[in-house]
Image (cartoon, rainbow, N blue to C red; front, side):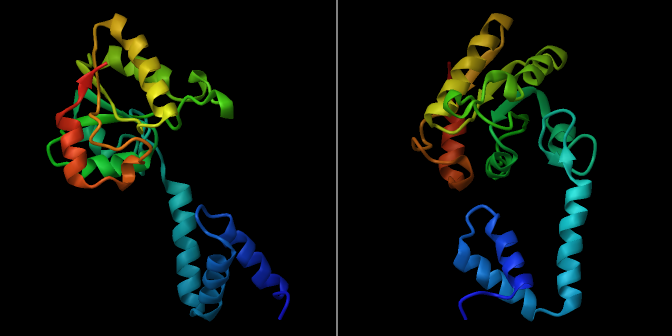
Length: 197
């Protein structure tokens, strides 16, 4: 069969919009849905709708939460803030049992080639937190990429005049690696060996 019937083609097109899902995978997903019981498909769809309607950004750090303030901000030491690019980076760092501070999610990195400026990410909110929560140390845990390094240096230059200690996670994390894929031992070492920038 050269073409799929329209309902299946639309389903394939929808799955193809997901990150990392090519056409072949999207076809497998579409056939899986078509072959599943209607009640399972309804539950799956409702779960997506519920998540979309209830999950939002934490009013303090910008992480995903279903409350006003996320669990990490409620229990963590607010004077120690680890800055990450995306909420998924927090999941990786939370595997490190020794860290008891909070986080700040930038929701992106400075990238002039893509048109992302410092005003497009949550730097102003970080500066506000530093003042309000009397932050003693900010750990820059952005990915060790050109954009991650540029963002870390930019933020460090803004924070140093405020008298805040700014550190960078050590290079136990390989250059070009996304934090979410780094193992616990490497992340632990990177946090322990962080350096002032």
